[in-house]
Image (tube, rainbow, N blue to C red):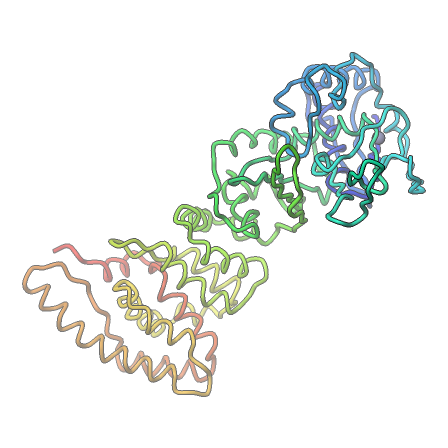
Length: 473
Ligand SMILES: [Zn+2]
């Protein structure tokens, strides 16, 4: 068993890319993913490979010569700048020169960085490559931020005050790793790089699953105008069996780059935990809900959902269902929330007692509210959503709604008699109304939240759906 150590550069995505690169060499060398394991340590990774160094070195050189010489790498890896023509001087990153490289330096674990000017950030000897602005996305090194750490040189050009270097082997491994276990895609003029960061031990098999998804993502597109903050949720919803592949073992590192001429400018990088997203996406109906919002460009709703899932934000919980319905509804069809999504919101986020969620009186009043929602008359549901405790808001809204419901029922019944399309109107019984007020007295917020969510959701039970939608005669 061989134990390899990543250099501890201090850049989380660079470290993991080097670890993925080493893992890939191990998998390619033996064709068996189960021989490779990655263990996250504080600031670096240990890569264990069942094999011998001679074979690993041979395979590394083979991969450099076969894979990394492709021009495709330059064209489609954001952050890597090509200067000069292929094979000419300046085309310095890739191993064109048929040189044999060794991975033996990763057998040692050493980080005694003194941060001297000439020291490469990986503290390895040997040939070094520059980390230019363009390369920063690949290494996460952005020392050339606007007007920070920059000085003018003799010719008046702005250069980083203390340009850092990386050894070439680390650079090549990072690219191998990036192409093995991360995702690169475009959203309009932005390039997005998503790198899974392991939190626990992962195996070569886990990495192969990630690798196999890359092809899939190229076919799927995220809408061009999606706000950056929604990219992780949208990305995870687009990946098949996402909860299986990105289990609790991973965080995601996300880098957004904008191409300016020939160079890339790093717009933002962030590292997020995805556990809450994955929990939400466990239910396939929730995935479909996200997909629907992406298709319809319902970003207002999706922003609220993100706040609900990620921050458990309660005001967003109340505004999400309303925005979802409004933004996914078409002229001819009022789209409601799936019962499974509503149940997630009620149980997992609002943590409402089951006796309230399942209460008949609440279901009955929600059914009447839903009649108006289907008519695109949202004001009763809105007034309930905004009702204040210790006021008559809830009571007054319900009285007004019931009065209108009675009138609507007469009209709908006439339509039915005349053989026209009609929509059944539910009128809650006096007993139900009484029970609801009683419940609201003791659990105001829960009752209000349940009504506000259920009013915008498809009913869960088959018979109830039939009770509500009987438009064809
Ligand atoms: Zn190095």
